[in-house]
Amino acid sequence: EADIYQTPRYLVIGTGKKITLECSQTMGHDKMYWYQQDPGMELHLIHYSYGVNSTEKGDLSSESTVSRIRTEHFPLTLESARPSHTSQYLCASSENGRVGYEQYFGPGTRLTVT
Amino acid sequence: RKEVEQDPGPFNVPEGATVAFNCTYSNSASQSFFWYRQDCRKEPKLLMSVYSSGNEDGRFTAQLNRASQYISLLIRDSKLSDSATYLCVVTAYTGGFKTIFGAGTRLFVKA
Image (cartoon, rainbow over all chains, first blue to last red; front, side):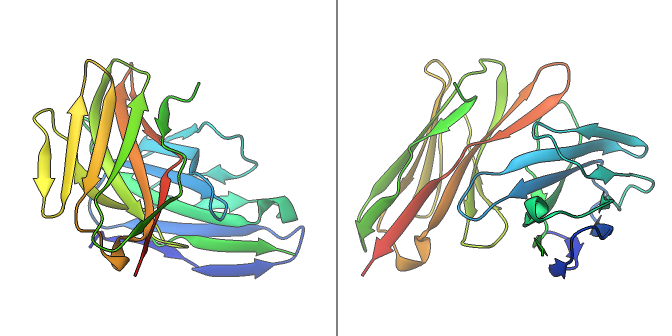
């Protein structure tokens, strides 16, 4: 089993609220990722990080922001939640190196904005 | 054109059937290949890596054809528990590593 954790698992929140989705891993992985996935749809990469103080935007434009102050922690923040942000958010991590390593996923946070 | 394309599915098969999923990728610099499984409303989990020589894990066999830029997954003797979405994943090094997930192929195995 992968040692990657996400909290909360489920969140229902009103429009305009600021939220932070937590992600942490104990595998010492340098690379971490955030994906957004609607039910029955494909994964979309919204942010990634190659290590501490490194953050990049992914392929899907997102109003969220991320930070990477510690190797094991990669939180995602929405300053003002909107109903369009309702989705599942999946965090993942992988080793770094010239050969691509598999990604390990957390259980996800299912966000509903009312 | 998407960088990783999979059979659209869904595949509906009876228990015991053999089913094959296909995946093509467009970047010839792709270096690592994987099949993931995702159950409904769960996170993706690594099913198996795909090696150039092909590899087998029990009822599952993965093949890679670099010349045709094609990956396949064969499931023999399908079980009800194999019902899931199967994701083809490709990683390429193009100045930095990029991992692309396919849209997935949904499999329903029926009794």
